[in-house]
Amino acid sequence: MPEEQAFCVLVKIMYNYGLRELYKNNFEDLHCKFYQLERLLQEQLPDLWSHFQDLNLEAHMYASQWFLTLFTAKFPLCMVFHITDLLLCEGMNIIFSVALALLKSSEAQQRRQLSQCNSSLGFVVHQRRQPPPSPRHLLAPWSLSPPSSHRWRFWMDLWTSKEDLLQADFEGALNFFRVQLPKRYRAAENARRLMEQACNIKVPTKKLKKFEKECQSLRESQLQQEDPIDRYQRENRRLQEASMRLEQENDDLAHELVTSKIALRNDLDQAEDKADVLNKELLNTKQRLVETEEEKRRQEEETAQLKEVFRRELEKAELEIKKTTAIIAEYKQICSQLSTRLEKQQASTKEELDIIKAKVMACERCRDVFSKDGPLQIPAVTQDNRDSDVDEEKDSLKAQLRELELELAQTKLQLVEAKCKIQELEHQKGVLMTEVQAAKNSWFSKTLGSLKSSTSNQSPSSPKEGQ
Image (cartoon, rainbow, N blue to C red; front, side, top):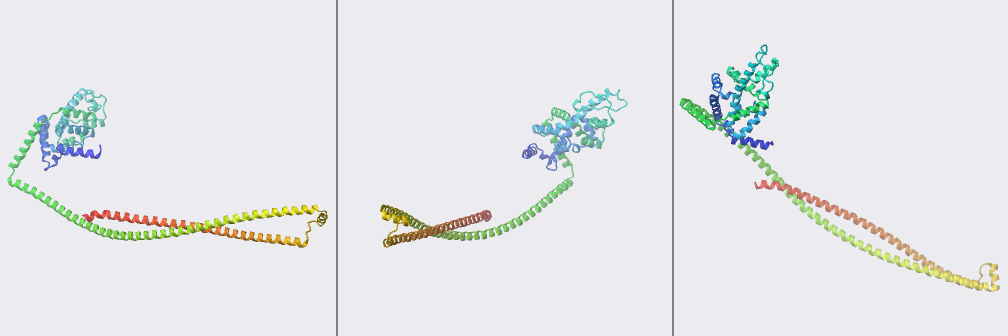
């Protein structure tokens, strides 16, 4: 059973079943229960009651734990569980039934024990009485095997009965209730038979109420027979004790109140100090927030300016790249045209040379000269003029070609420089974008952290300020 349910059962037993009343008003209700038990014992077991009167053995000497602890102090749990079940079903009257059953079971057991001992007395003259084999076979014949001295003392202690109580003195009776009686019901079978016998014992509620009235009348008669001075003195002592207790409680409460006020004042001072510190931190946080916002705005402006500069530089670079690309395309076109023209001129020159060579070879005189001297010999003036014209044209073409090659090389160099510059600008752009993003992230994280800290510091201080 969980602890919560067990506590609820305890509260139910204490309040609804009247167990709490036994502890109130100097145990007056408990003494009334003792009186009722003694009256029931006088009616149902008069010889035992008379013996208890002779020994001055009162009910509170052996039955106080039965009522206050519901038999849990000495008796085994297997028996306590049955008693608790009966208590929850039938109420506090079951305590009287169980108490009478405990006392009556001793008488019934003694009768069975005496009859069994007499039947086996002839066989065990030289030894002591023999014990029953088991608590589960209480009605079976005793075993005829001679018991040892140790087993004999065990069973004699276990089955001490009403006759032993009648013969026992004051200490022996108390020892019986304290030790021997709980030991008898360690076996579950004995506890079950005791519960059956307790259920068969009916304790009328009217009779208990009658005994309760008798107890109250006896208490009142004792108060009336008592000397008024003694009664007043006792009442005065009781009131003085109550007054001293109340004064002590009042002092304790006053001390607790003063201590609580001092503690509350200290807590209040600490809360106010903490509130001041939090307010200062809030102001500082607000100031830092404003500064951070200004820094953010300034960084945004710088970022916008950097973006504009990068955009302009990028546009310029793109324009230069376009121009350079157009120039390169024009130079390529010019070079291709010049190459084509040069090839055409070389082809025409070769054709002319072939024609001239064919004409020279057709002439017999010129052919001999050509064959003897090897290459074709042209007159000096004409050949020189031609060579000069061809050389001049070749030189001019070579000069143009060199100029075009130089311009092409310069254009390529400018193109390479433009590409390098574009790459450098793109690298700078990436670095700046990374820095801007890092600055944004750091600023945002700092701003968010400061806002969270200020919010968390402000939230616990607000209820205290309300108080």
